[in-house]
Image 1 (tube, one colour):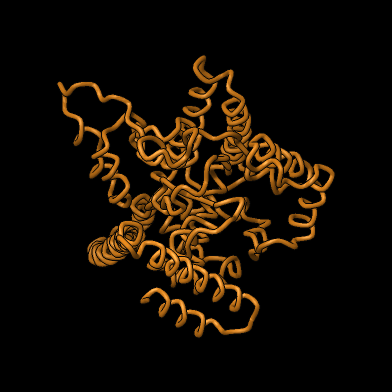
Image 2 (cartoon, rainbow, N blue to C red):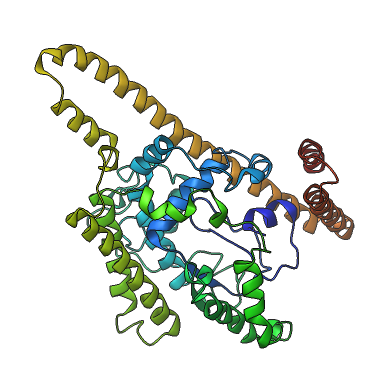
Amino acid sequence: KDEWDFAYMGMTNHPFIKGNYPHHEGIWGWGDVADQTVLMVPHIRRSMLEYHDIVWDLGYSETWEDSTARKPFLYQEKPGYDDYYEWRDRRVLDEIRWYGWYIDYWMEGGLLRDVFTHKLITKDHWDDLMLKFSYTREELDYNLYVKEGDAPIEPTYDPHCGSLHLISNGCEPVAVISADKLREYDDGPAETAAIAEALMNDARMGKYVIAQEAWDCIWEELIQHKKGPITIAVRPGYEHLYEEYNFSFDMLFEMIDELNRLISKYSSDEWKTKPTAIRLVEILTEHRASVEKELEEIHTGQRQLKKKDFLGTDQREKQRKLKQPQDDETEMTVVDAATESKRKIRMRYFTELEQKLHREKRSEMKQLAEMREEAAKSSGETSNNIDLLQALSDALVQVRILKDAGTIDQETALRLVKRIRTV
């Protein structure tokens, strides 16, 4: 289950919770039922592609119900190139910074930092980053919050990791795992063992971990024999993901800059003796080498960039204009202006759509939290209210089970979910 399932369907006894918090696609939806973290580090380049493709699969859905309804479409098709390039040009340079910022957040135990400068920030600035993620860098510029002459900002931690004590020993991960190696035939069993050892080292969980001789078997059944949940590897054309989708020079250099920053930071004297930092640096160093290899492929002509691969629609438009006949200049200027106007309207639509999605998600989470808090405070009816909430959560789980088993169809499942949420 992921963080949204916990927030919407209630707390259950799952050993793992997949979470994207504090990235704008995530939310702290699990309350205090998780008590240690393991940081899964994906390849920076691959994560950009897979992030877009999953959002595309879900139809840029605006609600949990809509996302759930579109889960059968996950990984079934290959997204169109136009959709990818439009999203890439608008989001990737910022998402590269979000990638490094996300790693910093967990490695530093929830320390509040700016996404783009990585400087320390105040809680008010943090709240704006959480609620206005689709704003431009200029609209969230660090200097709008910190003026010249202001007192230095003191280190401040996310309340989830600090004052609320939701994780007893803090948010810093107990292990760092390579998400890519976990699926590789050569290194997958070793990464699986690292996860198992993290569980074994916790006395509360260790006694429930299966015998070590079964670990490789579990990995083989899930990855090699594909008996586990559906994964992105089944998407048509996934094996050609690296070759078919390109990034501009600017984007690749930005990836390398962010990886250099992280590698330098976590190999410094402050961090270099921590096993988690050592492992993180090993993973990121391999990622940097592969991005540098891609740049070399472009320089040698082994990989050739097409017009669409160059950074941004504005840059591609300039290149196109250079090839237009001079006598068509007036006519083309009119057409270009109309095209550019439509493009800007479309881009603004997607920005507003993302912001609307985020506001609605936060609003619904707040309503659920208030409902649970009210139930806990009710005098004389506390146990009844909690029992009711648990019953509703159980009902949602049962709907999911019936739907997955084919006992009820998608339309019936959605109708039942909406009724349960109304109650």
